[in-house]
Length: 348
Image 1 (cartoon, one colour):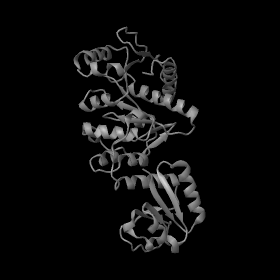
Image 2 (cartoon, helix red, strand yellow):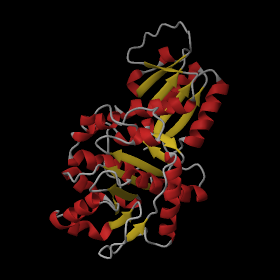
Image 3 (cartoon, one colour):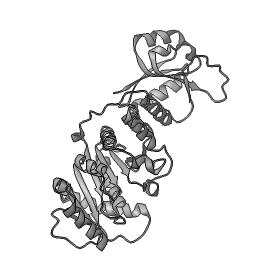
Image 4 (cartoon, helix red, strand yellow):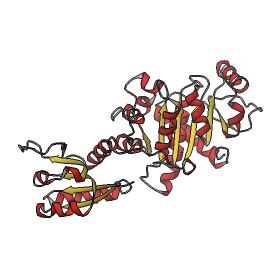
């Protein structure tokens, strides 16, 4: 659903810049109409229902709140204007247009009803999991995300079609991405409040090297208390806005983990040469009832020079990468994963 957005300002240069930027960068999210004459404002609003209106001081007192779902006042810095219309929130006019767009998406998501009817088959969902900690699971997940981002961007530069969703109990996101941005907890809050989760994700997600991601939760329990239904709705919302969804999981096998395994089109299980990883993996295979139901979707990623195990039909063997900058490790492993994909090992 596109948001019908009315930009009402007498500054025609600003409205054109705003409209051109939104049309180029947010064409899937907004349908923009501009209005520069206060006398025709009411007529413009009467002819069409607008979801959001951005208005400067020449228009704000003429707004019919009942006809606009989210009226917003474009506030000038140091502007002394008395806003008498109740229910109008303020938003800074002269800031990055991308920030205004994100803020509008976030605000509107809270008053818009959510829908969870996305066709997940249109999105490749890859779950990355390990039965043991320290195997390099998150590094592999991000290396795979980089592999997909590079492949897509070779064909469509500047696309945002790879989404990395970190659902670890204690997130590794700050290790690999800049720490700025709004918390994924804002998304979790909407899961129980009938808001538009997809729109919120669009509003607060960040982009780095072709990979879209969400920042860490505000606290541990925000992840820990998610239900199977929450997880299902979260995945559907993410899948609605991306072609490749890579989900990074904690090293446990909870009911939520099982739900993600069932939803995923591909499962990458990361292991290494340690006895701990081998023993825990064997327990998962022999003691966990879900293994037999998902084994056709599993690809084993053998990290850190793991010896070949003939009992695994689908294997990718990664070399031991000497310690260096995190980004360089991901880049090197991405090269090996891309080679494996070209050899059709990763194209289950």
